[in-house]
Image 1: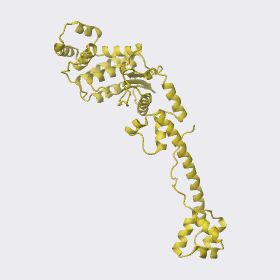
Image 2: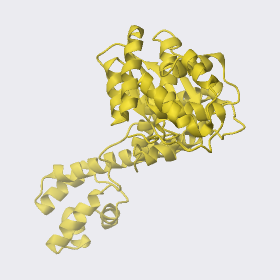
Image 3: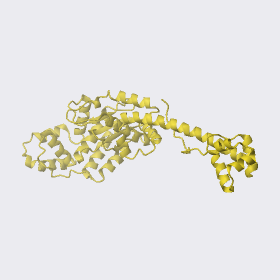
Image 4: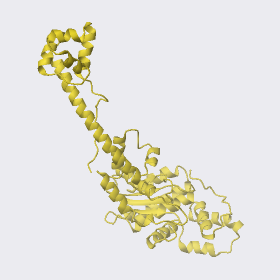
Length: 369
């Protein structure tokens, strides 16, 4: 199927040369019968021309030139423009009809409502089709349908018993992330040798918790990693997404849970994929669907990377082996966090997750500042 191109400067209705003749008669106070008698053009023919039912010939334009003292080309140009506009209007109808067919298919495979919410789509259906094709990096509707069919075979489309996932919304969200990355350019190449520096600098960002999201972007961009916070679409329980586009990797987080510890874990989970699983040659993008019943080994490796980026397994086990009253845990976590120079809420969040003791309220700062 062909792409759709917007047609500009097409009038809603073509203006017939008869309108020009009618205006001239009115301006001169002449009747159609007067003009017919003066030019020799049959009155019935003249009436049809003025009603727009037939056109004029070059011979008629010469007669009108004499009758109105106006150049013949004015009447011939009016006739030609009318015919061209009729052709343009006919083509516009074809284009618009075709666009409506394409748009109907798009709404079947794309979460149009979310793209409208974020301001990417407007009132012009032709421009909207171009925008959708740009987001999904396709040239035809057939390509879009084909991509969706292929995506449905990916593991992250598996249904979760706990959380509802809408395949169309997830598909749309993913390609919106690609779209954002495509528009950005970094002049720094990513190098895994800098991973320790990245972890160290990000730990400082989380410890300070001041302009945290901006600082995360600054640190990652500094080392050649694109970073975006993209609000999840409805029924897309995504925490993060990592992939490689062109010369740079990209990390996306959703802030599905707006706590500093959840952000830290989601971010370092995706960094774990960059450290272990994703590169320019092996770009199988990883989408982190929350609370899946089954976590594959690759996802577990990323989880382990995230946990160890804040505290080693050995130190954490030593902490957990101590017999600590739940109501004293804040004191012990604060001491450990100060010793390791990390944000205490990150440790407290892990403690809650592993113990399931969510009734214990945090005494640390949980919000992302």
